[in-house]
Image 1 (cartoon, rainbow, N blue to C red):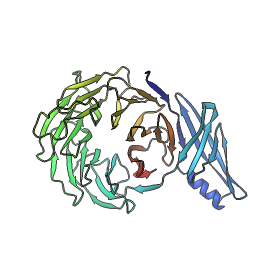
Image 2: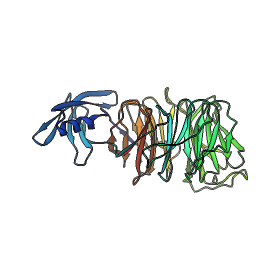
Image 3: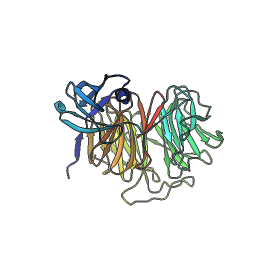
Image 4: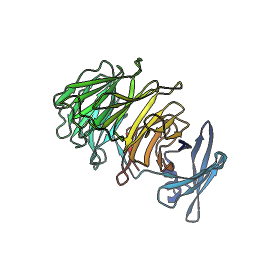
Length: 400
């Protein structure tokens, strides 16, 4: 079977377009407009949409090559750009929004598995924990890092949080009282990513020092350091843990390991290399060297046996179910800044240019509006019932 290859267009739409529609609908103003753009490969079209009333109806009229209509469901639009062969795409607005009051800018975020809390990390070492139910009021500040936060991550229980920083430290926090019972030291440069294993008795950390380290939480012990199998000086940028789909299970190499016997870790590097290891055996199962310049691996996420990898400035998302070659490649006109998978056939991604995209069953399901260009820093796609969360650098977290 030949690999699938899909070229996905991107849209950019004025974040305040709903305000424009509401102002015209209420009669506050008679006519207004908002901007809209479409990008496909190296081509782009930029236009505007006039909004005015005709009787009791709000009418939209596109200019510059766009046809835009109010969708059948509330807070949605359908847009077409015939010049780029894009027709009838769905654009949704957020169901809810939270503002991170603790900092005007965030670098990373996570939502608890129970959907009750969220945690954000800022550019000056700030980590704050908040409740979703009260609109983002600060529950507590988690103070201790010295510089920018690179990753925050809830444990599956939702009762513990990990944070990583450019200060080379990894800190474990209690969500109950904000205490920091353990700090993990061992990296020699900034920590770039964290990944949980099973229920969290073990976790992994990636660093610009060239290593991915396996830790045991209870004792704080370092169990193993993974290095690039090609033996070249590169920096791991991102990683993810998944179950082995080959049915192989091997006993852990250390009594401090838990739930590693049937797991893989996929590691992406700043030069575009990808390495896949058996967690319990520490053996490299696949090493995929870069084949082009500007191919840094920016994000990896997994669900079931699918490994989604985003690479390159001319961005691609790979489905690496076969481990060594992609079974599907999604081609985008802008680098990916976040991926979140919820089921084997559904994942969301955000790019540097344009609105985030929800991709299902090998095609775009819908685009999400509400963000300006170059603001989205992450995606959490928890479940179809709970929705998808996108976070922007300006501290806004929106649920769709």
